[in-house]
Length: 245
Image 1 (cartoon, rainbow, N blue to C red):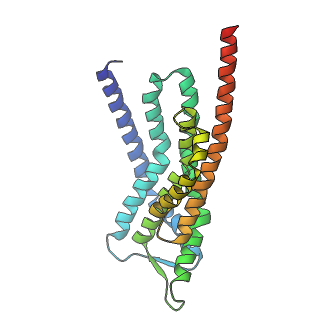
Image 2: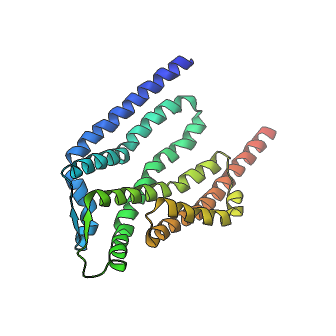
Image 3: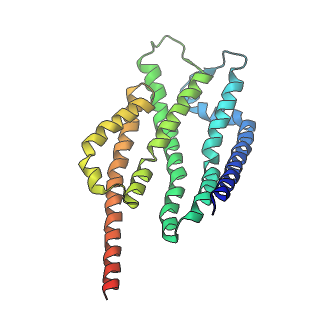
């Protein structure tokens, strides 16, 4: 396709992606109250109160929450538009190679969100409010601050769970290798804890809870990458034998 046609196609895909985002946004905005109630459950189940201190506070909380959920829920729709723009320029074997990673990306992000909400968040709330706060102080959480911490944790764990997808894709296309990842394991350990310290809230529990999955995914990527390399070497060997015969 000429460059102008590519730009026209890109514009069309961007328009469709924006339409998908705003369609999900308006639906999410309508259901923002039950969604926020769902996010508050870990705090409410432990007896804490979530309060609003400003007349416009919950409106802005609703807008921020709706935009965030729209990005998460609408990402598969946006990813489809990206795929439809990129796929015509790929060979058949390249499509077969990239499509599983495209499917795995939202799945792993949702898995990270689920681990954060059901496992990590209750421990973080209890640890921060019982370990440091005196027992005679009534513990209340401001809605905007609570949502900000929730979104920070969701982004941290969601993107952390994308690590194996990225590393395995790099191995698949030949940019990285399992042997290279093994040789840099010591650096990876340090980087995982630094990333956890930057992305997670400033408490030890959140940072350790984020660093441990990062390290586990790094090791899993090495194992899966070794299997991919072994399978690729076998296919290349068979192709050479077929060409020689």
